[in-house]
Image (cartoon, rainbow, N blue to C red):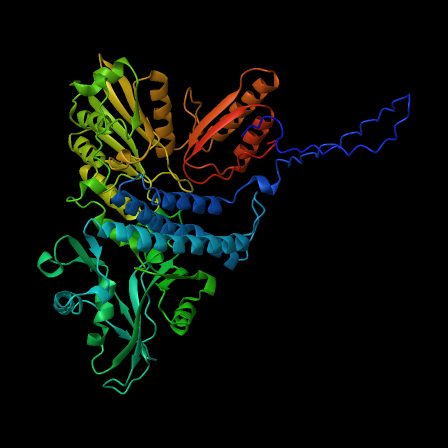
Length: 621
């Protein structure tokens, strides 16, 4: 953030010397003109909106950085495809949550500018502009670069115009036997209104000509494609030839839409996909109501207000306009795409086993030497703390510690927070075993972990069935803390063992994300973790911690104090340096404090994975 002085300051050229007559004896000196004053750089005040980036626009920029990884030719081809698909998945969630939230503010007349000075309507307009540009860029990259490159490795997505006679015959049989019996076309007329379509589902709008058996001639129908149907279908080698050959489900339905409307003519069939508000509308203060919204994808998520419409780029304007009216969307919320409307369904081919050369080499995280031959992890951790850096170091020691605790007769109790643990979680398996073995197991589960609510409710039921105590956190707050506490009797006394981490208790994520894990038997840390669990599970005032900072009580205040301390050091001419690695940086007070410290001369290095509302490199700031 710090800059060495002010750059790009230009000094005005000196005026040309005046022509001076020469006198025979005396030389007349010419006075040098005064140089023009250097322009003064305007340093914005720390409340200036230009110093702050809107968090939703910053999130969109993060997604763009993901897409740009797909442009990097140093990555293996299927890894580049994976990044392109992750961009789609991220953008879906961005519209479901972020864009939906902005639209809600506008609809409820709650427009209010933040530190960046932008109103929600202005942010939406900018999002639309950037998102359209990037979606066009994404499909151009897919069609012009990645798919042709995959074809060179005999991985082909065969378009209809390239279907051979054999493929056409095979597609007809597949459609007749596997697709037609499952899908249900819906004709549109006064008794068949426009159907309520599920969030992000694949659908087709069909333009018809003719009259049906009942004399109806509405001219329009909708074909919803059930989620159980695969979006890409592998063509048998005997039909498609050597290699990995695929046909899109959408191409099959386009080719045989006539078969679904007997005696009528299909003038056009166009795929489309609707994105809805997926933020749960259940009152967060009512856990019972939240549980009733589950299991199964919550209704409000599947059928929330529309926020985006994607259609095939060949869809005529009058049909696209018809769809926009049905969903109460504007032209700026329409995205025309040259390809499948749901690219995330291509993930199934990114791990092709017969193409290891197109993927990253398998990486195996290491086990620290201290733990490689340890029969009892408690003995090792009891002697010294162990810090793990994932994904380079394995998450296995964390799981092993819990497994040993589940079977150890000296372990009396286990307390655990769970935010995202994934399906078939080894962590949950160990907790279930511990409860069945008579340990006092308490799990603090965050039901409102976005898009994991259903999974978390299921694991809560499983833990309760095993005899564990399950708590759903604190009303009005999300429990983000990743911590485990094990109470073990040693030499007639209770000793606390703890795990503290920056990542979820999810073995899969631990192989993908950079996170830290601390295994410790430190007495002060263990006591702090115990106090924090008691605060989450029970009632009472905040207790003073010896080492831990916890939000919303001490974390922010202490961070501000630490930043101010570095600023004071800098003002006294002492070394001052702040280094931070964070998931996001959006808090205006923290950002303002960092700006102020930078102005005082503190060197600041930040590693921000996602949203960053701080604008780096501003001269004077």
